[in-house]
Amino acid sequence: MTDRTAQNRKYDAKRRAESPARKWYKTPAWKIRRRDQLAAHPTCAFCDKNGITRIATVADHNPRHNGDWMQFFHGPLISLCKHCHDSTKQAEEIRGFSLDIGEDGWPTDPSHPQVSGAALPKPRNQR
Image (cartoon, rainbow, N blue to C red; front, side, top):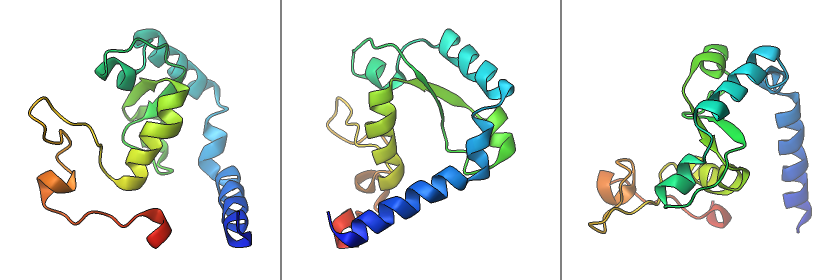
């Protein structure tokens, strides 16, 4: 790992830790909302799409709340397992579209460049 990469990771971790929205996850209101979401939808939504049954442990904001208090406490949630939240979901957020393919062989996400006609994003190491 280069010094620059280590610097960026340290900066990102500090920025996330200092975000005012991080404190909202510790509130009783969030804990109740998370509990209710996972009770109503106990399996991972992404795994379910692929025919896998896996217990969800994360109540994820979909779409992201981006520090908006109303979205955080009242926006839609989906239940995900930790693996899907930390890999698939975050990759989709960075990329801006899902890689899911329908039975017809075409992408199912309307914002996928193949469907929308937009240019493909550059790989992270070429930005």
